[in-house]
Length: 113
Length: 112
Image (cartoon, rainbow over all chains, first blue to last red; front, side):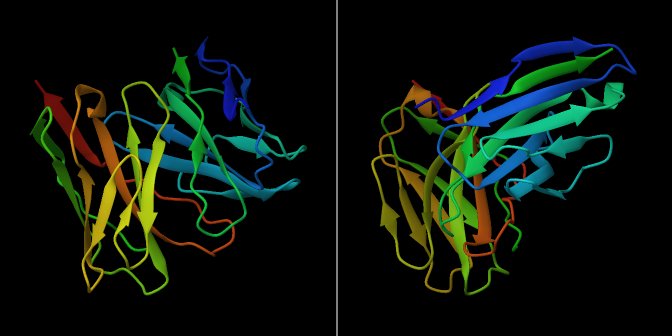
């Protein structure tokens, strides 16, 4: 049982390049989330999904797209990376039960030059 | 979801109890209090949650005031490995699809 797995762990992009971050969970969780974390800012919600085929915007969705084609996977895409998107990205999932806690991956460290 | 207020930093001696406060004065009757922590470079880790009653598990205890406007996370015997950022969050448990909104948390430094 791996929990929540994020790939890649590290990535360096040039401005304007695109990439996709993958999040996979093996706990059969309905809900999945993408956060970004910047120094002194805490965790900010980018997008989330309440089930396969559904996504919704969070606090800071601009510049990102997401897809949830399979229940176990939640993809975060950057179509044209900008230096402001340099951050640590965390994926999380939780069960549909109301009080269930979030389970986080260990992050993807992205640098955009 | 109600907002929370936490001190930005706290210090604790190893072996002593660490008491981390959180103010959530606008909490609604159906909102739970959750605590997470984040050890450097890792993803956040769930610690404990509660609604009205005090709660205890293998990691910590959660004390919620009778009016529910504040709570305290207690690490009974802090170790160096408990050095982390601790987040207090309140949310409605049965609200479909809503995520936890993390603030800046409290940085707990445990020293020997």
